[in-house]
Amino acid sequence: MGGGVPPLPEEPEGEKRLRLIDTQIVSYAMKDSAMIDEDISGFLIASTVAQEFLRVRDGETGEARYFTPPPYGLGPIARDAYVAGQKIHGDRPSNRPLFKRATDRLIMDFNNEFPSVVEYGHAGMAHLLNSGNRAIFEESVNHLPKRERKDLTNKFTFLVARGVKCLPVQPECVPVAFDLLKRLMRRGFNLKSDFRNSLNDMLILGTAVANEVDLWTKDELLAHFAEEEGLAKVKSCDDRYEINFGERTDCTRRISQESKGYVNTGWRFAMHRPPVPNATSYRR
Image 1 (tube, one colour):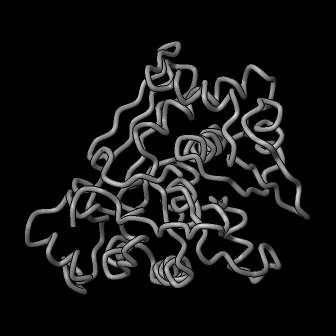
Image 2 (cartoon, one colour):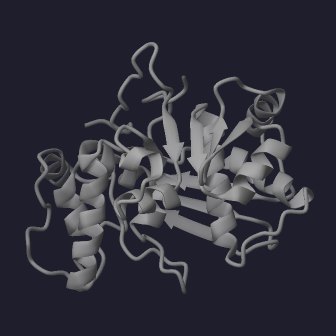
């Protein structure tokens, strides 16, 4: 297995476009809600959504609770076990998280306007979900309490069983998210009490913009911002919003172009072990 994320299914001509769904829609679907006809099969999620749904981050400390490795971060023997869907360290219990040094890392610095953020495993989580590698996921959470391990593994299996694929946050997504966050603030929208939640919203929206895929969300603020900013047409359907990037607006074109040479007021990011550039294209 190479450095890129396992490819997503091609969209048959004449059928619906690939769509991202947010964390709330995924959660409702698992709770047997009537959302999207009780089925999320074939939809996409951003790696940010996967990390929220699978509770990678500790809500109090903001630190990663476990680490999911991409195969290219492992040594040859471990990589062979990964590709074969076998546990690397066996079934022996662990009292500490594994794979921290093997996973990818995203560092975001906001020039003291907000606390710096370090996130792990965007590419790693996408690899695990897109390849359905339950064995390595179980090993990643093996140090957590038994009840929580079972809950997280059930959620992981739920996504894999329904063919939900994961788009990782890639280098081109982050500058877009930064620009969107600045625009959100300039429009006077109140950031959420936990800054990370607002940042996650913009990373999800930025992933949709950068990959030119539609986004379905239950977040009214996010939908109204996308509409007011002229990013896309927004359709209200029952208790969700459909942000349609089927036809790129002048605003989304401008954001995508400007973000390629992104210069902000000191905001910077770095990625360690990102997916291989252009290994897989998600653009329609």
